[in-house]
Length: 426
Image (cartoon, rainbow, N blue to C red; front, side, top):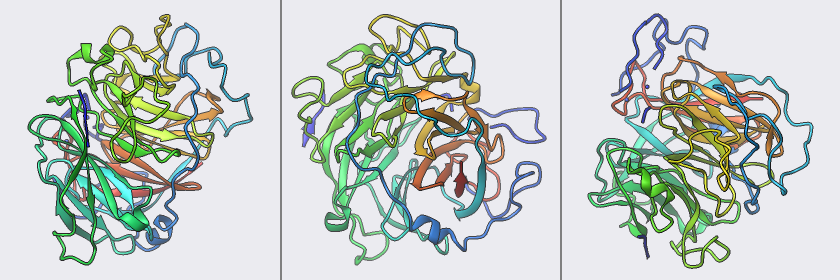
């Protein structure tokens, strides 16, 4: 075991007011909110979609995410070529215009869902931020069964049971990793999942692999993911104490990279440190593209939310820079948004694009990329149709999972919230 030293909200069809605050309800798509979307979606066929769950292979690249100075506009990409010497040559890339189709509903009536882990065979593990429990969702029927509670979770504000990730050797070790808030810190623990035990008692005792990540009422980060190199990455927040993001000795406002046992990885920017990049405000999205580059989404403050291309050891500017500042020694984002349009959480890579879930923005953003460079401005989908969007998970090919976040205390839950949807995208 290693010891370490937001605005989220919902556009309602037919409503003039917004609530910037995240319950659970029955079934159906209420009139107004679901207009123009499927009036009902079938559970049949979801098992086949989820059974294709997969993750990328290889190792993360090290191309910087900065770009030359220049004006940026909301929902835009900074002008000019990438400053990365290691960026891939410009390829044809995906089309400038994409498409999203909601093809099914895997589950409904979930309470404060946050992290999601696709299981072999198509079922899902889903973390409840506020309850501190993990449940299994059956792909074919949508049945939700609690498998256990994570001891020590202390929900409050934006903290609680957050990200989930399955061990790269899950088929043999059955280990589930969780990032969560306690009374004293944020930490990462792993638990053995034993399906032979009774429901509600299937999680073994937690083995803490990393602790000491600063906690706060806000900006706890929380996304964890195993990279193509089979190392564990974690996005953290600066807890509202902005100085932590630039403090190289702090774990707040960072992206961390560690072994599955919580040790620093050989080749990290600094020996004996898990810090991979710094100068972040609140990282909640991590994903790798087809060329094994690491992308991260993070909340801005009042001006710009960001999508960044992560380089080991790079400084992403916060709090000295927000959005495209063009400051020497700091990486500029690849794309930026006004917080009202985004407040990004989870991201995923599919069909040549990064797909980014927006909380306050209540939409799914598509950022088409040719190598490390955008081929067109970001494109929004599902605006206001499902409320706050928390997590997006790639299932392989053109299939995504999308998790809503209406019951986290900052939304306006309606019948069926919260839910997990299946999408086809291009």
